[in-house]
Image 1 (cartoon, rainbow, N blue to C red):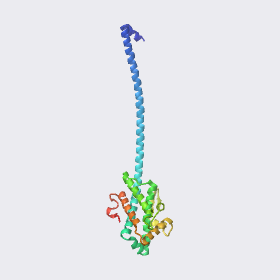
Image 2: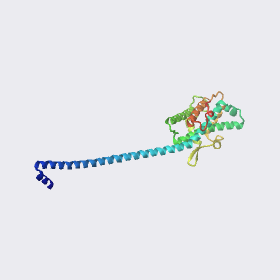
Image 3: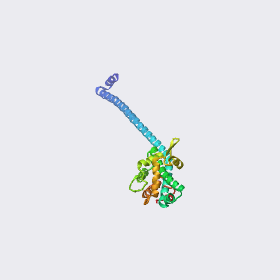
Image 4: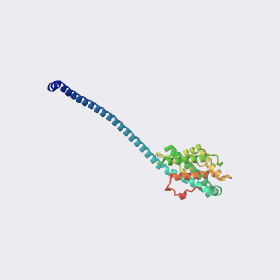
Length: 266
């Protein structure tokens, strides 16, 4: 107030009034600017905190995704190789049945030992395939590849193979219902440590020989009937063998495990 009186005395009324107005305007502007800056700082802090939390959430999500992909890759490495071998072994047997008359030579015209091996080992190869498919279903639900279209292709082929085994349009003894396929797969599973694996041939004979298990015994009898029944054309086995070759091409596209000359469609 004293400063205002001094200004009035020194410069007169009108000049003093202008000076006072300018002084008060400057003070008011400073206050407004200070208030605006404070509000801006608050908004920036809120926006910054929100951005930081968003980035943290995204990084955590990416980390969880990376962990899941790493875990899935580990499981894939654990099971893709055995599945690949099971697919190859089964398609190879089917190729020999279709092209090299394996059934006629060993199940029809072979010695008792050859007949027994041909029946049980063919049943084992079919059951082994169902076993590894069931293990993968239980462990990872489905095989995933880096490329989505490759994952879809594998799933489509797997489903087509299930459909070929269970359809009644072929009219041969080797029709295996979807539930039987899964049931046989479950019977083939063993637990070793903390991992699931599939029974080997020796364990298969010990576990399922001499009609000890209904599902596997029916499979073996179907193999025998398919070999000995008159007029069986093996169209089902031909279709399955072709799909197994396609599955090999997905699992081993570069022929690193099994060269292309070893996997020929009958």
